[in-house]
Length: 282
Image 1 (spheres, helix red, strand yellow):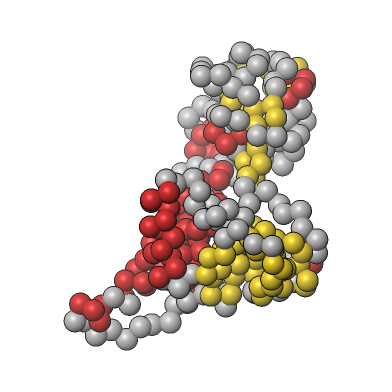
Image 2: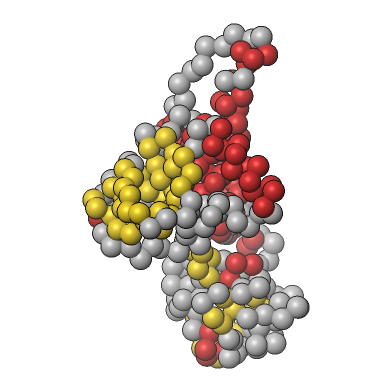
């Protein structure tokens, strides 16, 4: 089939640049460093080195770039795929036509795989805080002495553990009765205990109220107002599907705040337009 690949930023998307690849690279480093702490219990005397956070993050980026070199536009162009990388993204004109910048593209079928973005917090005073999320976190080169994760899902938990193992003071605030609600209770409970034993602070049944200043968050826990201070705050309060700007209405593609509506075959309400991944409501 004659195929076009359209991307707003960099090919590879979430997994390569902001998700699986960098997070697992950082987790691997923190795991190795954490393992050194156990050597004495095995009868091996080791002088614990001080982690160089800048060097660690540079190495993580090297791994990302190593993956990306196999995903650059020319790689796909060499395979006969038309590639369009444009910050304006794709916009539907009608059910069979889109624009990408100044280009007009007609196609029999479309597959929408635009993914999702971090949900930004609607909290008083947030404009004075440089909030971290899973996209801009990888730009850090100076290790935070302290960091608070708002939301206790998978993204925040894995990064929180990694940073804690690299000698950061880490807290997780979650509005639920426990973090990792996506896991079964027994497994989630076991993981929470392990994290606490490693030194993480986990604050459950807690919701952010307002930022007093760039380093102080006031939150409500069990009806009581409390404060927590940190060098950085990381928002991990869910994801939003990337449907903005696609002008899906012009193609009769229905969607909600949870994403594009699809059937069991990944067809949208326009049967020749498919959607998969985080942009879908399923």
